[in-house]
View (tube, rainbow, N blue to C red):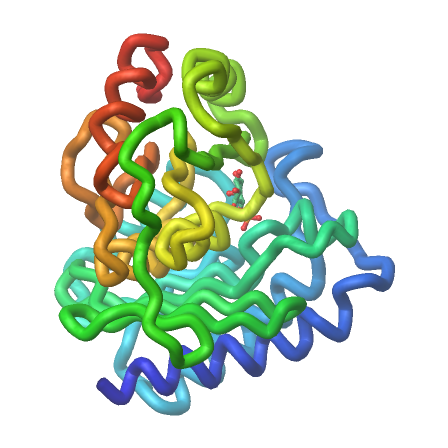
Length: 274
Ligand code: LIP
């Protein structure tokens, strides 16, 4: 599919800018709160990606993190409006902006392409490690061109999980998520919270993490990672267990084997989100 090459080239172009600016001081703007930030590099990287996609696919619609107002309502409205579009790109120019600001090298570019609301390809690029994760519906998932698959752990006791704390702490979701972490942590090998939803999802696809969950995320945090995981043999649902679709905000993504166990633990802790 020619859109895959578009996504790869756009991610690499934006990634080059992000790499160049990664460890220098940045101009920071506050979005919804002091923990929900954007830099001039996020905006410039999104412009690069938008220009690139538009030059190759002028009639396609682009939903980008920095192209809508901050906040749940704007994001939901944008998604709803875009439902009618046949060709939709879902772009996060820097997923892990807080890490980027602090020079904590765990962030990425995330680009997905959906046809009639179904994600058909995803690209996640870590510009620091120069790792390019790609997936195309029905064809598989790759890391730098090599096929990847989810991990083989079968029990919680063997699992390395990851989670996170949403930017801006909407509706006290950080406390809710902490309840889930406290419920699961005695039963698993360990839990990480790296601060980039998309990169965590890519790591589940590559078998580096057994599973990942987080509450109150946006479409651009999740779309590319979701197809990476399904194409790598894993499972992606919301935290209740409903199948993934573009509007999902509370995500649960695993290698498949531990999916039910994590879901049950979150339900028991009252930590599936609301
Ligand atoms: C971030 C996520 C992170 C999550 C934050 C935020 P951004 O994306 O990837 O894992 O905890 O809420 O959404 O804002 O850095 O692109």
